Length: 102
Image 1 (tube, rainbow, N blue to C red):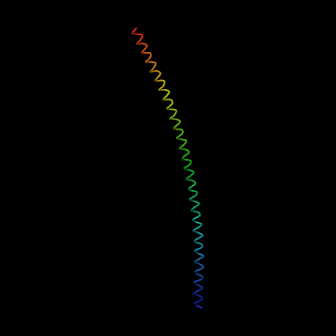
Image 2 (image 1 turned 135 degrees about the vertical axis):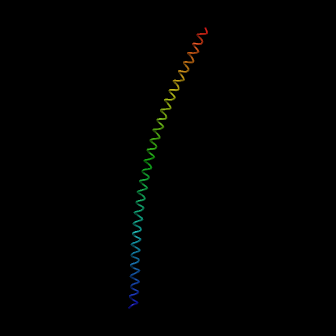
Image 3 (image 1 turned 90 degrees about the horizontal axis):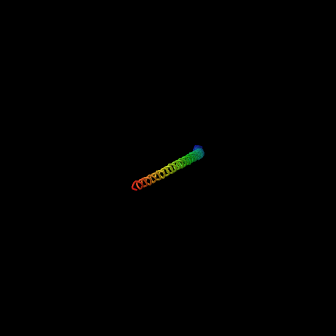
């Protein structure tokens, strides 16, 4: 009788242990899925923020390039005007020197 009680205790222990292991495994799987979902959400959010940041940087770069292009055009126009004025002055001086020698 004691033998049967001992054997049944061992069997009950094994069954209870395997049930606990199954519950632990199910809980671990569930926690793993939750962690994966959380990581996926964080990754998607980081990806979205990165794309948004890149779009803003691209827009800022375009604006900066447009501004620099406008400044360059303005400087070139002013330089051309200055060159024409200098050429006119040289011509006028040459003309004045030619008139005074005659």
